[in-house]
Length: 242
Figure 1: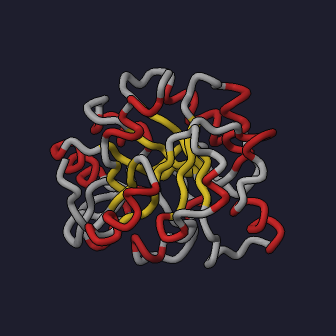
Figure 2: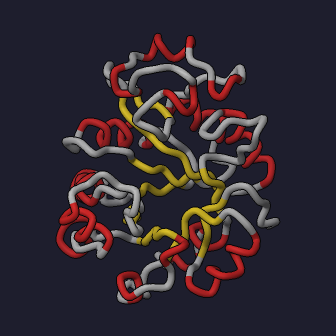
């Protein structure tokens, strides 16, 4: 498959859906708005304590719900009581999000996993088996992608990377991940997603045979700066106008 002729490079990707001050990120309404506009959708998946896969970015509940605690300690029944950014929206399950999107636009799924790989990755694989639509999976964790390579090699996988400036990871991990040193023997990605502000750089240049996505582009000015270095963008806070 020539990925340079697919949605990965042809359709701008709405970061956590098409969200704004009235529409929370990673919400069902944000996904519905992106579908209406014809944009592909990037979303984040994590695992609850009871094994439910949900769409949520942060480890902590504070920023998006105003509540104390961490997403990994919740059960599915807890979700109804948590509202996103003061709206009526609740944290959606992965299956609920896919039902809303319903194959009408492609989905770029980011696996958020800093822990032991296997359970979350397998749940994502199992859910996607019954999904009729275009999708790809990406992660900062090369071992998450390595699991997909072994157990679901047909799923397109992308290696996320960047500067890791604000990461709490040990310096050696930042060093290796920034340079994507696990690509060759662990993740073997089909595409690269790299931090827009760090493009161009020598770490991505050697992967010129793979599609390159730039994240997260937040203005037309930033888009005009980065477009000559990438094949597509993951965007928010402006409308690239398909």
